[in-house]
Length: 558
Image (cartoon, rainbow, N blue to C red; front, side, top):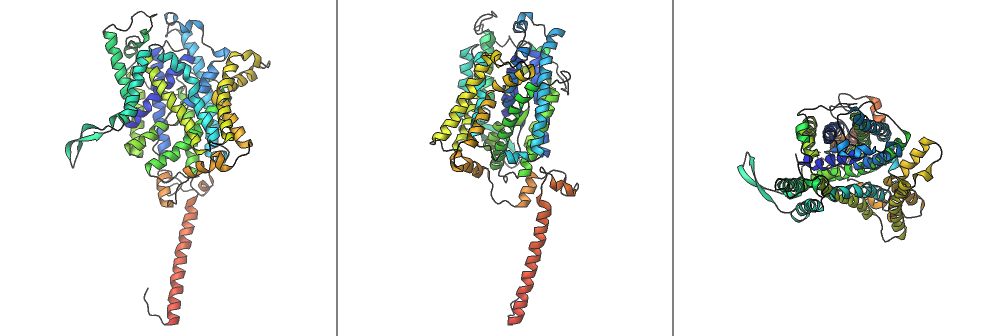
């Protein structure tokens, strides 16, 4: 339940931001369907990851790393929304013309995600991820992750700006609960067989800061709406803070709706979208590898071996493929927020995550859940975005802790990569005609890549970090590797945590060529042979000791 609620903020945010690029800002019912779909697919992907992927208790869900290149693709002149879709009075959500407008764009996003996910599947199951990590360090990851959230400041500002008072109220509640009251325990009734009914201290504010903040702001907006404090005129400032402006979707949404692959039509593919989406795939993989190590450390599990990491990245690629087929508008990745929740709850159990995945599946089927989340007032969402995007930006910058930031080399690489990742996309958006080569497909590829800040900043950071002379310690590679290295855990413990379930590759489905696959354990034949040699060595040592005793006349019994 806690993991499900922790993931809820991100799963709601992605469809709402994406709706502007899909021309859906005035179609709340379709927005609710997108929210339900992303919940449903996230449940499927979580089950696949826990059972057959890296096998750590990590929630899978939509990722902002796919959102940036998607918005860049949808901002191309050929995909910009018609002017009439921006006017609520002209939009008829059930008309074939409007449905064609948004579904054409969604199918294009689906196709690019499906093709880009094939690259992630290859990198994961081929074991190539281990080779790539040799050249990717903190100075590449820091600007890449930072630029995932920074370009979204305009969307967050536009939403919060619909009523800054409500937005700041939401921010106040989230900051109050997550920072000031996080160590305050609330006594809540609970039941245990040994202690029967009793009160247990629960760190409620630390576990649910975003949910509590949204709920309180939402409730206050309802009170202000009923009291007619907020303006009723659609053109008046603060009108979108009213709860009745988006509440109609609750009555329109069906009680049950089962998302299915191809529900928006047959996916289409463009070269420009594929190249842009690859930047999101690479960023997602880098973030996930760090999440695997962090999750293992918080769970008390041994550090993930290379075959488990490769398998986890490959399964995430399959998850992105499913997300593209279902049409969530985003890929999937490991949720860093839920890794942090493990440290709070002290519960690192696969069963708990499987239960959370089932909750997401049920939420995706119950249409009223998505409708309820789509009805949140716009300024409340904007306040949440300001906090959420700020945290994502800080997570990217935090990777610099491994580097020597007293080094002018590192300061130059990070500063230049970050600033160029903001400047070049801004210039490219305003001067797209100067990038025309006469070949439409090439023009689109160049424009999407140059308007994707995370690609520009990440590429510059990668090139400069690997070409400008610097020691391993200065670049942060030594501290980076040490933070991800595990201790001398026994092979039995590693096998218990990371081997495939149902005896696949070990007991029931043991095939000799499995051990040659990068995503399968290779230690079983070697470990069995080592155990035989060890036993034989102990036997020979015992025999030699007895022979020596008999020769010397020593009557000591062993």
